[in-house]
Image 1 (tube, rainbow, N blue to C red):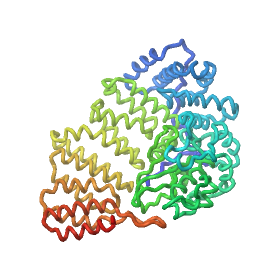
Image 2 (tube, rainbow, N blue to C red):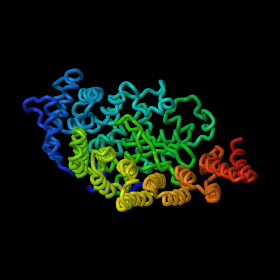
Image 3 (tube, rainbow, N blue to C red):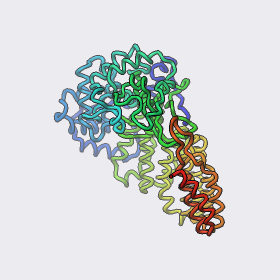
Length: 583
């Protein structure tokens, strides 16, 4: 599990989202939009001109806000909102900056319309809960006329007998119970976190039932296990039958891991806690658990329940109501770190990325300072690292710039390794292509970078990433003409991870492909066939043990090699071990 990030805050602030809105960076002067009107095109040219100097200054940030405001006005006023309403937004720095940064460059009218509805309905309460209002406007606005419920879950949990509350009803619920039952501050928690509260799809009466049962419960980790495990659910409808999947019915009739994750995440959202239905592949195949943003001592981190370490669920996926897509749960963990570091710095870093992306490729190659400026404001924003990786891979930024920034990334991301591999794979792409002609010194340098990353994945206990790293390292060795070194790496890594993570097959297949000597191949295949687990972990209650697909694959390769060597009887014996289970 990734290490949590430390929070510097007072004890009082820890009770209000752990002080997560500690605005560490000073905001630049709010963009003045009351000057002589300038068009979006004029402002864009000024942003590009100033941005081409490569410094992310307060002046440049303020100029971008003016440009973004002009774009928003052209798209939204008066077609979707009145001049009067947009001027009200523009006069409020919290609302204005968030909309300019998050909605740029599309400025979806649905989000602004939701915000307008909330301002008209809730008045002073809206003014006090601006971040909560932003979270609701973005979650509901981007959902459009549809549900805020994760698309993949709608077929099971959505029901006409269980209607989803409206924007206004749901917002009112949180205001009503804010002081009585909410476990996190609805005022100081930044909207990117509150979005995982705002997308609560369950009816108000179910939320109130959850408050009655759990508002005073100390241990959130145990809620997942309150739902009885229904073994009959595996083979059919289970005890719940055709009843709607209400929280009360799930508690009464039970379910499997999916119901446990859904139940718990909705209880947490109803308590004002950013909760997520989380799922992934592990030793026993697919599984669902719950994740949420909470306290670990004096630290904020992404917490889990039902994510069994022995089943090796290294990679989890959750629905992001801000993006409207599935993302890694570790992305939420990284976002949490960004909010803790500085919400204002996070906004400024994103503005730096927007400005950088406005420039043409030739200019971007000379202004890596814009990306450095974004990192200085908040190193935990993923956008800046992805932009850097993209431009290094495409040759816009030099290898040296990419390597320097990647070194910075290592310093900040030891506890958040998922993004590092995505970035590393891209920045090494041009080096991989040129490996055959690179000098010995350069090859050693690149291998050192790879080995540095491998150590991080080992320390983070992420063998899934370690396996990917070894595959990348082996591909580089092959491209550099070091086939023997690559073969040794594939063999040792595949054997090391054969029982720990089922992503080793790529290493295994490459090792087999490079082995020209049949006797050597047979010895290796026998070792692997005897080591790879035959079954995918422990069986779920009421279910049969499932044959490990990796076992079948390795044995099939071994059987083919045995037949190639004329050892048919031995091949038949091994083949029966996999055929018997299939029959």
